[in-house]
Length: 120
Image (cartoon, rainbow, N blue to C red; front, side, top):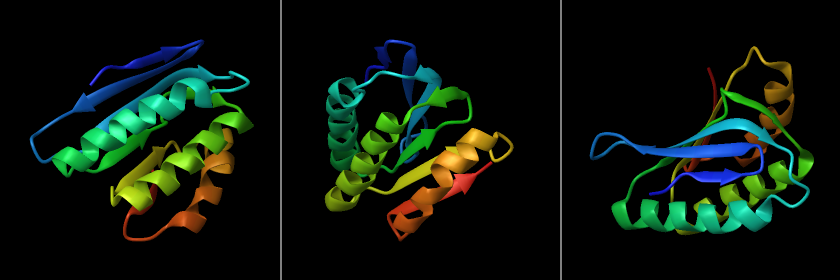
């Protein structure tokens, strides 16, 4: 699976051991006015791969410098699409970085057996 580079944002994909998760490693800044143009097709590809291989997906935000409110909308759509597809989704963020905590903690309302929010 390819990485995504759009503007100042880079998302590297990593698939570890055979039964391990598909990891999406977010770096840089997501400050595009309409990030869904790049993120939606990328997320669709990731979810299709996760469904086919029956693997969970982990979003790693620990090294991300910033994302805007348009980006969180795309992430919420991913959470909803993953749930509909039956794909387990885990969001990991740095609890010591205030903006990450403030931006991602509200996603806890989606918590269920297919979605986990994990501060690290």
